[in-house]
Length: 388
Length: 216
Image (cartoon, rainbow over all chains, first blue to last red; front, side, top):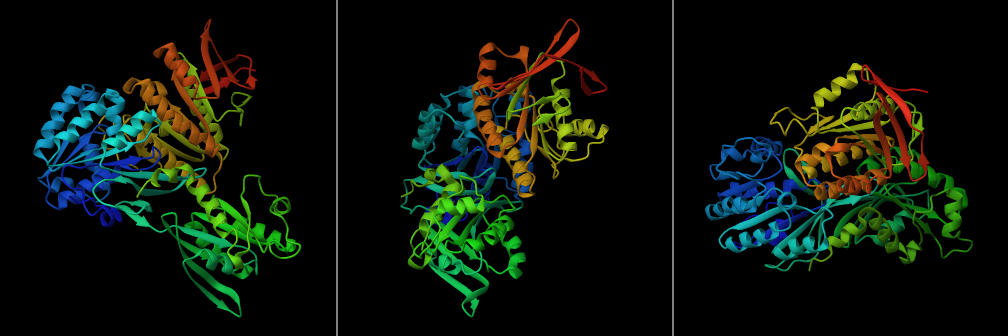
């Protein structure tokens, strides 16, 4: 069966019958669309698909599908397990109705029937069933998994701060786990997914940034990092030092348009843009800043007189609330200021990373990238590093 | 954050507003939002008791001049098909992930538009506790209160004192680092603010035409 999610389709190829896939979702990230997208793609392939709703009425669910341009009622092979309506005392006309969503035996009766009669069962929120019915819901989930030898179970699971045993159990019970996380800063600046586990194929660890389009659903995209700094601070050298491939548009040795590099690092493919340092190009910063996920400010540690301009560039590029890291460049030259001296001169908060670098010799450049990725993703990335 | 309407300085990001039913908790948080949003704060109102339209009518009645977003957890629960708008998002009260995602969406919008001062009302936690068990709500609020703190916003959560057992109230209190207590004594309504570093005197208040007035 299809997964229907960009990149995962290429990496995992398919979900074999008898397997379970869990979308393991950060509670602050819009992740229910993953299960919905997998279901819709398989409806298009002609499979019999059923969606288990525990958090919204069938009407709301159909409207939610429509938001993404997916008209599920056009398919006779689509049905709903309504495990919601009875909870709020409403009646239901769906094909499968759970008359008491707090009773696991009643849920079990309906789910077993749905498994027997369908190719794909998508749990809209497995965590809600767990919340309503308690930890024993996992025992039932294990039974459903054993029963589904000729079908596929896909679950959205919101990873609230449950006890570790429960979170581990969910992962153990799944043949494949895809983590869906947020890039946490003061707010969530972006979303990513990565394969945490899969037992039917071998894949290399990879994280993909995504946006949710309405209509359209999950769309992968390439993150951008902005490298800025005063004239002759070493921005182009820095971009070339961290990039696997890079080009500069320059004239007479200084950048007059843009540096562009592509960095393959820690499973991410990142577009790096270096901006010209001259003031006449400042309008470009606004455009690039609004699209970027983070900023690297390169300063010439031997020229304290350029630091006010560096601060000005920082303010222009971080007006959208982006996290930033300072590369204190040219540390191999005489009289280079130490990072703490630069911090004091620029009046930067103590928690802003200032990393000593020598971009011409690639010294410290990956430390800068690490510091920025840590600011962007923090511990969240660890969740997807288990991919093999 | 200064709350002129109560004449207090709130030094906690997550404040529980607790008191018996009908003492004026909802009116209090609406008055707080009204004051701050009128003074340039971004406002988010999560309503589990009234529809978005009812809440908006209240603010419009007093000619609110500012940016307020509503997360309506009522309309979807009662099977209304009212559509979402830019400033109103509707989600079932059972869909805690949906509520969490929409709060973050509004915070992100404020952040990216350069608005760093944001005030939030969650009215009320008690209604959510009628649908889902305290452990589930605790996990949800744990994530939410951390986000509010990380953003630097101020949030006020109403809780009906008499609706829950002591254990539930004690569990909830762990999540909040400030409390506004309201009570009624001898036909007087009084309130006070408590935090690890502040403890105000009890202040008498009245509600006149939906506006809260603290007696000096």
